[in-house]
Image 1: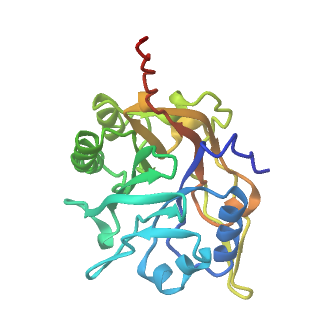
Image 2: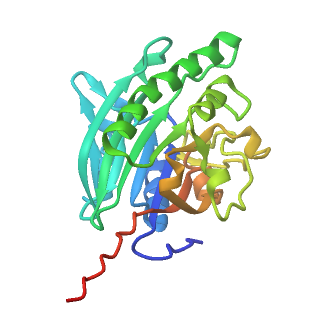
Length: 282
């Protein structure tokens, strides 16, 4: 069931790794999910050349602007989408992570958006290094986090806005990368949220493809708790953002569409109240 947003000033912000394999019926499932939950800002990961070429991003029917879908020879695996008519784009960029990077799929896309009400927010969609075979893999993810902080620091300094780093960070809350982000002033949206009931993992076993029908089904529910989650929403400048709720979607259509569950928050940009000037008495 779609929990409706409180008011027009509350933004729905979602992140989702949609999984690399060919889409088949997953495209229909994914678009149905996004239509039902209707995010104002949507950050995606693993948008591979095959998925780009499939026309998946055209299935939003003009609802969103896609930030930097392609950069020169590269397809953007981590695009940011924002609702047309609600935001204007103040600045944006894309960075392919240095270091270990399988098939050039690990990157961060950033955007600074201005809401029609005047509130501003920074958004970063990221996908960190994936392997977990050694401590060097952990250090690689920490290096990805350091590279993200280069852009987050610049956004904070130039625009003085709350910034949300979100995506498949491929690490848990005990990892060097996560702890580094916390040490740099980040706050997990799970901690910031006024309401957070979905204390579950965000990663689960992949759905199964029937080779005859070319339909995906049978995706399993995630096992474990939020302590096992590898998809995160981390806020910098948290005092400028009121997170009303945080949710993890786990219905069967979600489980059949990817090996990650979408995570979304409903949040409101805090605005400074103008001081009233008293009229001088004549």
